[in-house]
Length: 583
Image 1: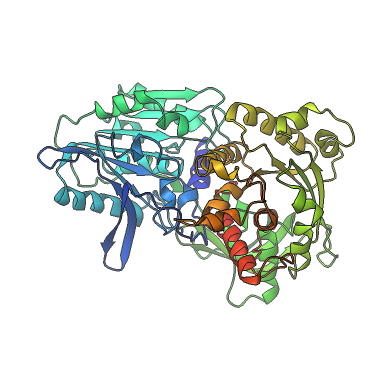
Image 2: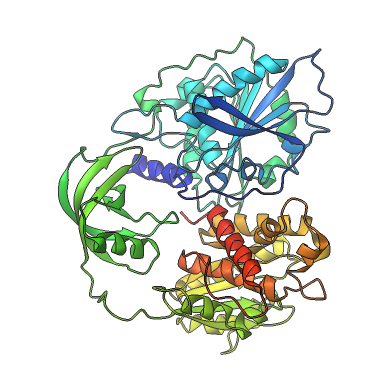
């Protein structure tokens, strides 16, 4: 059971993000834009070369691996969270920094189906890219370092297992290796500093504790930092000067080896599945995922569900409804096992076995919006309701606002439990979703405890939490927008809840070199609150998160030109696709 849970955790962290092509995000000129090409395949990456680079001396190389939320092909998303750290400081970083981007349909590590997996193409090309850089730059081969966050932490362990004699040090953050009993003896000579928060709800800390204990048992020089009340985030680690001091002090005593080893079975991640071609009928609860692929658990293994080519159209329709949360409960599934990069059931028949009548008129999604003066237009203009009403096949939305000017989550919480307070309304137990929005200048210490309190209360009363990170005031661009983004992504990952990342939707809409006119178009005259266009962008983002459906082509308020409305819709949908989803 322990091994199954460990595989499940790693699978959640590293699962491919389908349909996640991001628009170009703001470029970061300190990083060169590059790609490694191998025939018809390529690996986009960014490269930081220190300002004082001098080919007369050798330089260390750091490989930084991003998490699953930054997959794609825009060669920019992978820089999220590191541009203001030492990894992005061209003036002070004493090393080259390579930051590859994993394609949406792959991962830094493979999980084998019934046998040890091969190295994934992105990871193989990382090693090939290092070889290219060695020809171009004077690299210190004995000081090649690897680190990463979440899926990137998992990928760091993966590359250590395949190239144990290559890296001088590693620093995986909130990305455990999974249950691999034979891994520790394989990598015991590599200095590793492991970081993890003890309240991480995305990648539970137990797996990191297990590998650290195993490494210590074989006299590894491993270091371990566990953050008390820490969630699923990397910012604390990357801001710690002690990491830099330790990292750059590490140097291999022997020349590195770029030849991969054969990873032992007990050091590999392997999922035992039903045999290829097994045909049967299974009954169980079909799960909704953040990637529009419903899953069914069979004997402890999650199988993706996709319609068979010859299946009636109703099969694809029902699977689509399940993936959007419109159909729930136990289902009977008839199909055939298909083993590709992940296990599938190719579905021929599927039917609900619950008492819910699929032909009933869809009940409205009841949504409570808890917020402040960033939100009134969403409520008063019924922007969400009108989006749903114009979306053929979508459930209606009924939005109730608990909106008070200048309010924070803390002041909403402190208002007590009266019938018109946020807590009182949540306790009525009548909402499918509760959207939480905090004041624009909120800091982590004030945001986290009350987000947790509200989330606990919402769960107790049968609702689902959605975190709504609005834009900051215009004069606070871009730092305030980035701060709100980081704050909400970290808390969303800790609580495992969806995020409306509107601060980054604003940034995405602005573009790389925004004009004052374009930026001001989203704000009211005071430049502090959203105007109609900003409120509509908010609403399209909320609609995408609540329904998993695209707002492109849906109703827009009078007063917003059609081309502008379409751009706002497309921006909201692109941001939804690029934002990390609950696991």
